Length: 393
Image (cartoon, rainbow, N blue to C red):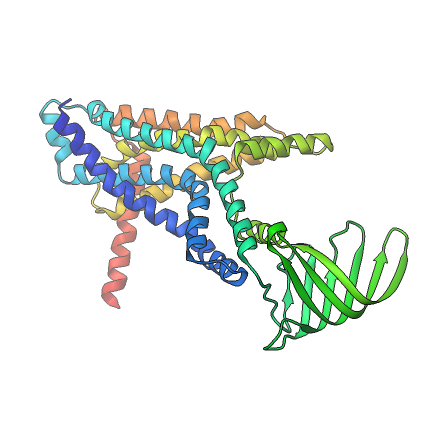
């Protein structure tokens, strides 16, 4: 295969891959952007903290969006080559589809290696960096901002309600606190006023309450206590509060080590670990989706059609839905103990790999894949109906 042909295919794929990667990553991040900004701004961070948090959470999204971008770029690139009759020209010059697949396979292999690196090293690094940044925010924060007449839950296990926060001074008036940090016990604290004492070096703050009552209830003993106080110090750890808020914000995929630790912990207490084992095996198979989607994308991209470039995007959505529905179905079977966890994670990649090889062989023999043709016809009809609706409007 000539170098010019190799780099021509490679250059055709890469820009679409980069754009698709950016778009899909931004779409997944949209749910987190406002929450992270609110978290940092309310807790005393700055723009650099926000940027670092986005960098640290990026591996958890990239391991998903890289395979998707590979599929989209392959479909669109070979769809464009097919619609402009360049695939026919390549074949006429003696270049087979197998040879055209070489640059695609190398590109998919690079994506596979990057995704593997993110799964094994990027996720642990990102989780550590995320926690470290939250600790940094906690240390740099000199004052704790409590909003008046609002139930503030920034501290894990505590809900704080303040009737009035004077504009000048740091004393709060009319304080109500619900404390359920101790398992099996709950305290309701009422105080006339209070203020925070901050210790940044220990990531600890003290909420000093003045003139109030502690109402304590113990369900096991069926006892209720009321304790009056003139001064009461409630010790809090701001770093833990920020980490707890961070866990609420994110839906990070856990790293392999974290999953293994969770499995070991659950086994110690005698709980079922099937779902965690499925997730663990999925980590090992996830990078292979880059190669699988490349195998599927090339033959489907050169299918004859009239749908234009939108066909590649629509078809990629259908393939993604089919793949992840299959993954969910096998996970459901594993969780119900119908099949072992390793089979639930390994079966979908094997099935779609076989489908990709089958499609590639059929495309090389210039034999059309009828389900793909039916799908193309359906997309054509939908586009024609959509155009008619737009024209009528």
